[in-house]
Amino acid sequence: MMPRQLAPWVLAAAAAALTGCGGGGTTVTDTAGVTPPSGGGATFTPGSWTWELPSGFPVPKVPEGNPMSTAKVDLGRFLFYDKRLSGNGTQSCASCHHQDKAFTDGRAVAIGSTGDMHPRAAQPLMNVAYNATLTWANPSLVTLEKQMEVPLFGDNPVEMGVNDSNKADVLQRITTDPLYPAKFAAAFPGLTEPVGWGQVIQAISAFQRALISGNSKYDQYTQGKATLTPAESRGLALFMGEKAECFHCHGSFNFNDQVVHAASRVVEIPFHNTGLYNVGGTGNFPEGNQGLFEFTAKATDRGLFRAASLRNIELTAPYMHDGSIPTLEAVLDFYAAGGRHITSGPHAGDGRSHPNKSDLITLIDLNAQEKADIVAFLKTLTDHEFVTNPKFSNPFPAQ
Image (spheres, rainbow, N blue to C red):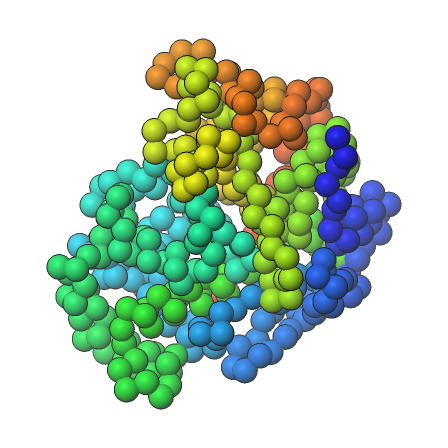
């Protein structure tokens, strides 16, 4: 099997890490052949918004109909944390996306404002601007604006719980708060009626695009600003090498394999079956979690999900689309075994023999030290500055 070709920045970063050389201040060319800003503090300014992009990060793609602005991101931050935006006034976007957990919630599956349990885990939002698709398995949700309609207005399951009967009341909570009129006016200048659901969605989407994370220990190392421990260095070599082969699905600058940016020409949206389930040996996954199959009805898509970014992975347990693997150590055991064999209970079955399982998921001969080394490397992807940055924090301290 031929390995997938790595992006040039990955090869450069891996070479730098293995030779002990940093990459700070070097201009790198992304896979579309466009030279983005690089080096600490580099900026790119379209209009009234300045991207503060980490080294090697390309300029994010922004819809023409929702340009970025400082005022819009500020408004989006307030709305993101405002519980009054849910139907019953009990839950905000941030209720399922906590900053200290890289904007996920630490639960196996998310819980909506009325107590409905979502079938899947809340995904982290760091670097969501670069995601080619925006849920675990829906290939049609490719913009944050469209995706935002699901938690706001969806009813199966209920998340924010906004519906036709309460839409006007929920919006009135916002329009009558003296905090908001000036913020909406600044974010959407020139509109006669700047407060509406369309503007709410655009502002929250702009705030989410601003959630850029790229200052982990690993990032600092590739810039020559930090040193990896021997265990972390061994873990990096395994991660990028043909033994553990993690890079096949996590080989972009965002450590995933669905990436889009302003200069993208061809955008790949692969989904993968990793052998997590094979209920009763039938090829089924648990009801409501059949993956890409639920949107295509193709038997070959049963159990296929998007590969998550590994940035800040230390903070986003439990893992997998349904939170069914509790720790990074257990994740390594799962992949080393070539899938999961559940021997009892309603989900019993040998995922290792699932007919749709990716060819990349095979037995990996990793000893305990090698697994520990990979986990040590994965923890270098934690961006402590990002999860404490006041620019992204709750502006309602009493909540």
